Length: 375
Image 1 (cartoon, rainbow, N blue to C red):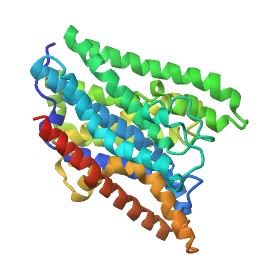
Image 2 (image 1 turned 90 degrees about the vertical axis):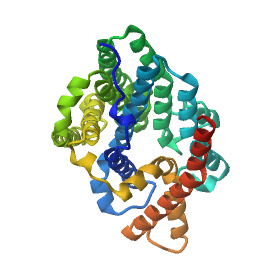
Image 3 (image 1 turned 180 degrees about the horizontal axis):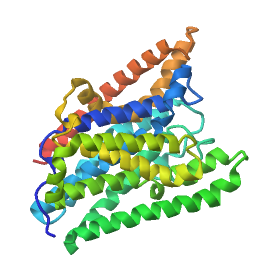
Image 4 (image 1 turned 45 degrees about the horizontal axis):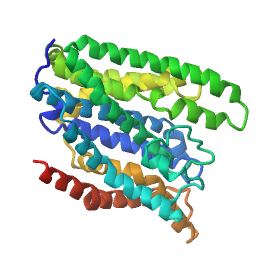
């Protein structure tokens, strides 16, 4: 089947995706806030344990948006503009990221934990490889950016293969093989590295090191996003039949995520480790589909608040752990209880302020300069 029209993600601003970005960063923020090295109210620990899946929602969004733009490009020009693709990705992620890396390495007061991995692992985006969160857990959330960069590097080659063969079945076949491979690799790593460590000092470390952080184990969300973009780009008749059922996808997605919540109550269990990631990815993939289809409530509704949160979400993701640490450290010097809800509100405000400054002082000017020089 030949390539067809532009996918919807490139045709207009999709407000539904802003809602989901805001949801993703909210989930991540509260999940990290309830970690043991931050003071937090008890209710945050009760309700935020599923917040780790916010990263998976970011993965689905990235997979959908980046592959949609590539599919549009090859549809129009029959080839990938490598310099434009690389430039856009570089200037989108690197300025804010490098700023935060510099702050972590030059301002020890900013670090939320003691151990910091070597600088070269951050500069080469290999920090998620063999990461020991016990001894080098500072700025550990950069692992997800490593996964995304690896995906950005591999995706054009993947798309080129599909375009060169001009077979849609190849796209979905390869996506399916990668998903199955994820099941097998997680199962292998869980049995080989985590199971023998249960009850030992390395139990927690091994699960994160060999199951949670490796790129090859965390592709599910990105692959689901690519699959959605593939249907929208290459199967327009199917996509058009789905267009009237946005709210059905929303309901089904929430149902799957409810099931994933109970499956992943013990996220380090075999079932959660092997099947939990793809189930979460599929649930969020259905939400992304609902946000894109014009009939859904997510797509039809607009919000200045979620649009703002979507804009600053990347800067907020990068900086929030360090800012929470600084905020709570300063408050504790005035004998303010860091485990109450007032401190939580202050931390939300300080994190939002710093992320807004990064967005308007660093991200936005750099992107504006890049666009102006590459018209």
